[in-house]
Length: 240
Image (cartoon, rainbow, N blue to C red; front, top):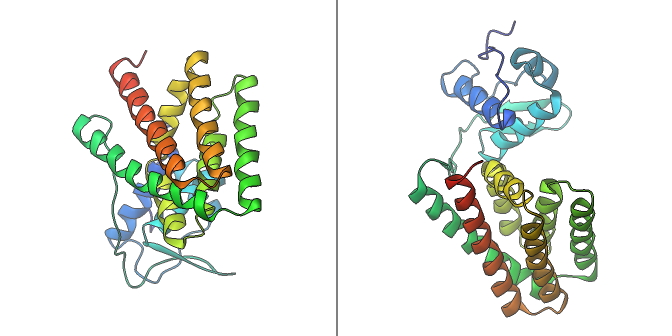
């Protein structure tokens, strides 16, 4: 058993990766894993927490987004010797005011990014966005929730901005509010009519980006994200 991490097996929950990241963060902040020291291997961490290696990789990715962990090619992952100086984002599903503030923040970032994507996108960018829009269509036909396809669609839009700050901050937001995105999408998948409305919103965003119409892309993104916020609020009030 490893001595430098809290190694109690994690109970299965909505997001194992977030829980693992929290446990490793606690070990780092308590000094159990010192600055500059190498993290245990994925296999060791997986055995300690009773989770798969993909879960460990996702947890480490969260810690890297926080600036708490850095990678050294060929050597593994290390605790940042300079410590983390990060923007923290820990959304609460229970606090309705916090949830509303979070969505306003997300909308401000995503809307601006979508506008810039419409202006800057290349033919290759457009093909990538189109491909993930098609992936969403396949998920709908196969009666899947389409969470991963949804995230890939929005990620492709961020990359079409050709703005490193939008891309890196978007990745940070995705890692911290992944559960929020999943919950909104899973709630949508409960209703076929709602699924189609969401896909229509995605298509409107795509058409504006294809036309390189920044103004309409901004409006379509704002409409989509505002509706996503409303859908999530409905789910939180009526979870069954």
